[in-house]
Image (cartoon, rainbow, N blue to C red; front, side):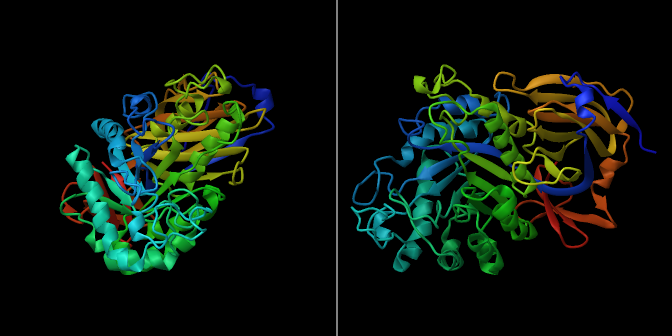
Length: 499
């Protein structure tokens, strides 16, 4: 018999108001994706001199930081020498080295994305995308006779970074191959990416750079026409490790969720590798409602099957670290953490390394809903995210699949009240909780699972389906699962898990 208890957990809310606005969230044992982490980009402009200012990384990265980011995106510029005959810009590969070294020292992941291959490889002769009068509005594409040069060029980037003490974890094929730009860029049709990967991706030197992974082209809106062809081709599937895209023009619950279907089927990770939320807000910092919409974007990415979320700039008035520009207000102090950094910390500090569990909510799931929730398992911790954007708040009836015996709530209710830690006193182990959710709040509940609960073992057996074997990421069978590995179930399905 399931036991229940009403938890006040010292949350600032009025029960009388909540009575008319309750929500029920049910957590199931079914496992979905394992979350690799969260991050941002080390790019020109926000971190000038290009990438060499490590202050943002020092504030944001590592398990002991206040924010807990662990993935950093770098641009692979067309020529590390900055030769204008081959490159669109004067920045170079060296610029990212200081920040990349620090991220790696703190246990993080670094990956590189080309905005364009060298201009000499392209149809318009320049790394520039071609959408400008200067370049005659000639679309820049990778020449077919240079397809064989592309992956050796990526190898030269990996070798350069290795020589500087940075083992790059992954490389992408192209930033936004579907977006014709007047800056550094390169266009590909979906079938051209398939040809490039199918016929030439074997040239990525995984023996010299063990563990390096290949990321698909990162389309502007995470469209299926750029992701599904790579997954539908058996040769391409062998080479692509991470299916990636951006969120411009399409919310996570739309194209990204659809693109994640085949990726999950074939055991691939799904990374959202660039989006800037409310970057056009003018001369002010994002208000609290805009921060909650950012929190919902993070949550919706998780619900869509995302395993890695990488924001755009680290340092901007609409990002994580202040720029020092007074026109954005006194809170925009240079190299000071901004409220948005604490919002992503709810996920980065606690969801990284966890596995998402199935949930059902009495409020209809949609983009920018009045209420959203998700749940994750990590060791003997159960993490429940709850986001409310209403002006009244509500009570949340939380139904769990196993007993929990203690908990804490990390709560953010405004730009001035962030990540406040509140105790959740439970007492005896329970499965059903009633929790107060304040108006306009982001809440991370972290519960400790009762070790006597049989449900922990149930996580590895559902509806007669059992785990049959565990393998490392190279496909070698493990006698005892450890670290990050792949579990193979009796029905043939696989899931990435951590031990």
